[in-house]
Length: 369
Image (cartoon, rainbow, N blue to C red; front, side, top):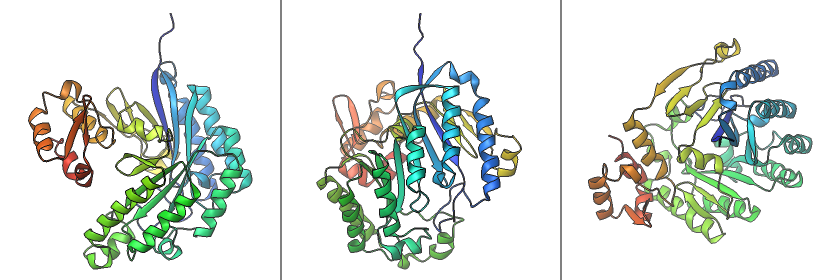
């Protein structure tokens, strides 16, 4: 009798970049080619060590994130995917995404990605205005992005995401609208649009913390947020998550898995995993990782933590969630949020209203005990 395998998502962290962006607090930094090659060898070793998972799971998605995964030579991406396929069963329809920075890909590299099985690209554009890109310390210009995007289409990529940022220092509604319209003209399958968050420990924090006058006002940020929805929806994109828009059937399946708490396994420096409600976080020290010390922390989630995550993550989706066994537990809270017109319900699913999406940080925090 054949046992049905569970769904598993895989995340591969590539912690290298050409230059650290001024707003970035991710676990990433520039590194020599020798270090990058040593890191890939350790990645392959770490993947081989997870043989106990291979018989239980079937892979539905793979996501190469960073850092800048496209900084690696294309053969290294191929080697990693080859090892993953040797270790796991893959669904025939598996979504395999690679984050790429404009200016770090060329025709041969993109074709090699396709040959290796990558079928989705995510370009970190952020802005179509060169002055804003320089402010962010991005390594590319709008024109370089256009070249990379065109090459990706010519290489056969029919599923591309473009990342955008709003509420940047000095950004105006007019310049942001121009970015939206330029990107819309390219007709990518997916657009992620986030407001800038000033993170502690970044150059932006040193520069702008305590100086709100240098950033767009709350009212301007709000208008940019509304502008995003209006322009993208008019162009045929559906908002399926607070900050993510997609053409029909082009939602990012990997991220949907996170919001729906699908089991996932992370490989690489600082990568996180969630397996049977146990959270694992890898080693965050590069030197230790390169010495084969991959493991970091481990935490068995309590029933309360599982419940909180179910609502905190699931309600990010515009279609909402079925409260299921938790309905009675949150009965009074759900009633209050409905009265406040922050939540609504249809066909057994609760979801954020337009007002609820606007105040999503407040709403989601209500589910954290």
